[in-house]
Length: 139
Image (cartoon, rainbow, N blue to C red; front, side):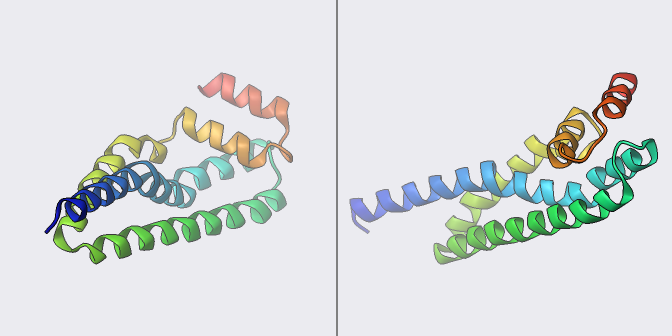
């Protein structure tokens, strides 16, 4: 194996490590949160009158499906690229992706990230006063 080939493998492994840590792990966790914490928070906002049930039924499935599709695409890209490089490629992507899961796991908790993501998703259809009152009271 020549020096150039060795350097290209190192660069490839580094890029996939960063891709797994900064892209794949957060996207998978965001997709999972749409089925768990984001769904529960949006349902609570419907109960509080911040958004309507119709807006929830219209927006949430679209965001959820887009998140799942995007997470699937980046995961397939990571896996495909890693299997192409054999066991070392798998290790170079798997370990950083697992570390990314540990770093970004707060996305799955009911916290200020949930509140910010809800605001971004429903900003055009929500009752801002009720929302701010709920946030001030609970966070």
